[in-house]
Length: 391
Image 1 (cartoon, rainbow, N blue to C red):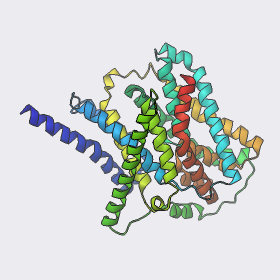
Image 2: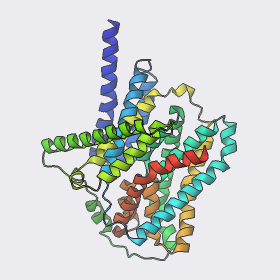
Image 3: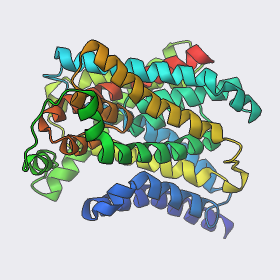
Image 4: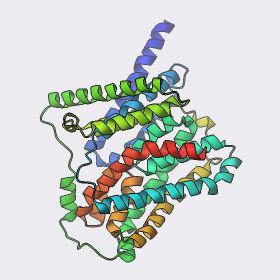
């Protein structure tokens, strides 16, 4: 009887981990309010609620651990295989990207030393504090999809993972509100007006950002299956190669190999024909987040003790924008490109069309997405590099 109950619990937990994120993603496509709230926020709340009530037992935790380890590896190639880098090597994009990247790295490293005394007071070890900086670097050079792989690569504790991701949602949410309501007047005041508003701009942007639609269910299933097979092969090759490389942190090696192989494959014609790989990778990220939230015991959380993480994230997000604006004035970079670059790096490329609509400038959509995807591509490298530097 106990064996039967245990098997039932395993089956229900697996169904829960893979079914809930899928349901949330489907509902987000039907009801825009869910996308505005953020599917990740909803999944965190569900994970915390169920993980501390009906799913709080010793059987669930090992399942969540194993599944989170697998899906995060699958997410990396799936998200990177969908990148299309052609026509993005223009001087303006490269210069804007480098300025944005430098701003984020400089402010993140500076914040590490500024808030170090508060981390010491909260009894957070230097190694764990460096892991927080690494994860922040990964997030703010490519968006939330880099959260899972970098945190796994540096072995960020689950409790700190939830705090970083939770505080990140608060700060980046406020940042997005600031950009939507005050972005245009700030940019127009600091930089010269370089674009004329048109009534139909926002509408045309919305049409350009429409997603790919498939002919039938069979084509969707076939496309997704091939994508998963390709991602699995990349994971298998990366794991095999990591066994040959004699380094202590094998997870970090696997992440780097995954990123490199996926980027190389993204330039091949057969892979370019695969559609929807990014959404599929994002789905695996959502599964990872739900699994992590389910494992966290909220009764052990000490949010007031770790407020320095909130301050550190706010400093990194708003400080990097301020530094980016200053550097953009020095290097004579277009104001609209600066703002869309900041959003692409900090909030990820899906927010680019929205900012372009706010600025009434659809010409910055492609450069903004290019900068964001370049950030996706190197975010894993930079996150691990910052951890090695600061720890």
